[in-house]
Image (cartoon, rainbow, N blue to C red):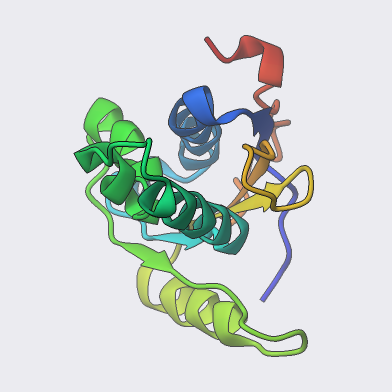
Length: 165
């Protein structure tokens, strides 16, 4: 399986995280051929985000002064990060949350390879914490890769953090 350059990258704080993910996914899906774009699968690697969201939820749950709200439980679901993109773009593909549990494992690579063979194209998106995963929002770096690389060889400009509303 050939490697592809990043098609989008951004850094974001929590309040605009799903918006940042949407902008990066927009650029990545735009790099796919037209016939694949709407239904191409997405492989989402969000281990850092999930670990932070769970730690935050536990802290809020254990704090008698904090009143849990429905959003606190919804935030645990990594699919919520891509929901705004799907709603705005009309994307109807499947999302697979796949991350390697241990260094040296190939779980995400195997899922990606299988989906690429089955669909002819896909997007992978990864969120990595910019700081230690404490209880405060660490900020996240969002990177996405579109496979296959467009045949035109056109340069794909990344979404910059300052472009995020």
